[in-house]
Amino acid sequence: MTGNRKLGRRRALTGIASFLATPSILRAQDAPSNIPGSVVQRNISSFALHEWRDHFDTLGKGILLSDTITRTLQHWTADGEMRIYPTSVPLTEELTRRGYTEVVEKRKNPGWAPTPSMRERNPDWPAYVKGGDPINPLGTRALYLSWQYYRIHGTQDTRKIGRRSSNGCIGLYNEKIEEVYDRVPIGTQVKLI
Image (cartoon, rainbow, N blue to C red):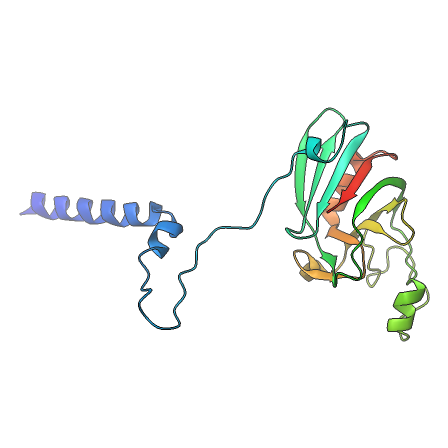
């Protein structure tokens, strides 16, 4: 009797482990689809990596490729090492700029002044916020691009990452922009798609 009980527990544990190990996508296929209004959801992300060669001729000093659809930033160093980071992206298509640019300046604890169009939309915003201030939207580091007013920068508000939440810039968690900042030289090629 004791042997059968052990065998029963072993089978039960094996069955539970097998179920838990089954990918959720396979279990989702068994969800009832004959119920009106029910939707079978798949646990598949829209996340996709890009190849730098599809956008640039050479690595040069390095490449930053920001995908505004998947809200990711891919960074390739000059020796070809690639890292990927989650980002925030512009609120609307009107605020989104796409194309080629480059890093022209780097600043630690940058100060921030709203652009004229931001001031027009938000007249109650301060004219200037010094670097290091908790309300500074540029976070702890900023990469200035050759396009006026556009930056890749950190953010104090971590709720913005992964969302359409900026006025045109690409935002990263502060600890991630600090990593990128340390690895990116002036002259790094940038493309926003």
